[in-house]
Length: 162
Image 1 (cartoon, rainbow, N blue to C red):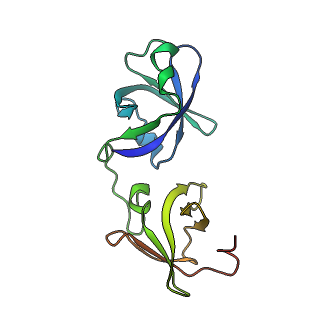
Image 2: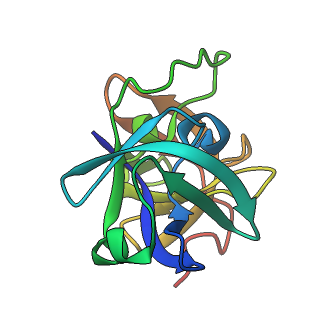
């Protein structure tokens, strides 16, 4: 199972939930018929729409807010193989990047590991040990080795300043 978001709130009284995504390919992950697990309970998605920065879901068997309000604040999980998307060379799934060790090639220092990814619309930003923010740009990222869980960077001046 992989973390694909957090159930942050509800919309209306009919049990529609508001998800803040922490994943990629949200249109596929939240598609009608897909299943998610929240608080060790599995739900099948019957309706999906986007509203601002949130993903609004309705689940099979959920009739009203009372059926889901105990889920607020819980992480939303999905089976690792729930979606099957072939990526072009040089592109990766979030779950492949998160956990990679980041090395500064200027001094061979380990900066930490990628703890999350911020999607920006153009290039994602890798959050490293909740300390550094490294844009996924060829100017900085020199190597992504998924098998070795290693990312090598050449930072520009100021990129690593805290």
